[in-house]
Length: 389
Ligand code: GDP
Ligand code: MN
Image 1 (cartoon, protein in one colour):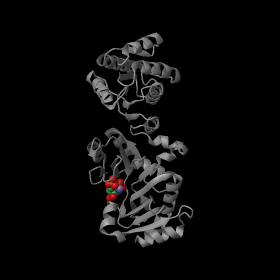
Image 2 (tube, protein in one colour):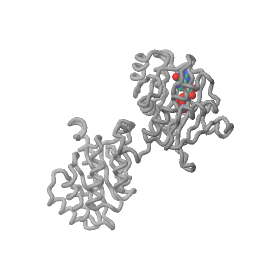
Image 3 (spheres, protein in one colour):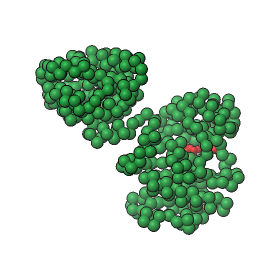
Image 4 (cartoon, protein in one colour):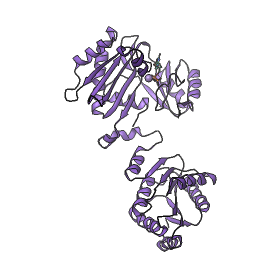
């Protein structure tokens, strides 16, 4: 999981790394209010999971409220390498004397951690490494030994950091190593690590990649999952062999086959609704598969109705129907389910659903009719107030 800058900085702060005060803003008005609280000048920064924001116009200095208004307006909605900016980080500006680079990552071929430090920060480190490999100082760290202050001091000296920055940078390296190890990160990168005009060393940017496999021992990571994509849901879906993609609508969708799932998303929007997700149960439209799919969708608080669209080809509709009825007994589903089953043994399937007489399930015969019904239910549930949860 990649963190965006402000999340990375919040992470850094837990380990005592010096970062500048700042606030998140999702609108121009919020950006203005944040800047007023922080005091000018501030930096308005796009929060997207990609680097090179500065070059793309996603990082701007603002000396007044008018400049915040202008920059925030320009940066929100900006497309940076395919990432649309929906969130800003407004940070108290720093007077920079020098820009450096520091990172820890895993060197898989050496089977050791690798620290890299350069006096040529603020620019793409890949370029520096290519043009002037000697400008990037490296140190392999054996996890059993850890990083010592002597090792860190030697590294920053080899990197050619200015004398007045070295002690501060060495201390930052120790904290960054701690953050990398204890935080179960695959990568922690500070670019630029700056020397301020008043002689302090500070992290002005943060790139953090967390090891998803370590999520079980980091309940605090749940707070990082706030940019629209639920990694928990996606992980659960993946572990159950489902192909699941979160979208931003209100109708949960379950279909068998990627083509049918995509058509279902389309039909929902054709009748004026919006899909909360794409979920393809593939060939697993049995009890287990349906229960898993419903479980995943049930975790999404924005889902207000569920549309199950199954075409029985190899899988028989009566099996699917039995699976759904059983799954309903296992999973406590919040939203109403609109079901459209067609294909092999459809008539038997409809009988099974009707016999079950669950008020949770509405049986529709056509895909269009089912989509209309699901969208209506989502609208009603929305008006009744908030999420189903
Ligand atoms: P990136 O382009 O995505 O890596 O975004 P950064 O956060 O690294 O910002 C890009 C550049 O903006 C930095 O290298 C700095 O030169 C500049 N910058 C960022 N924050 C400040 C600040 O507080 N003051 C000043 N003067 N420049 C800043
Ligand atoms: Mn940067």
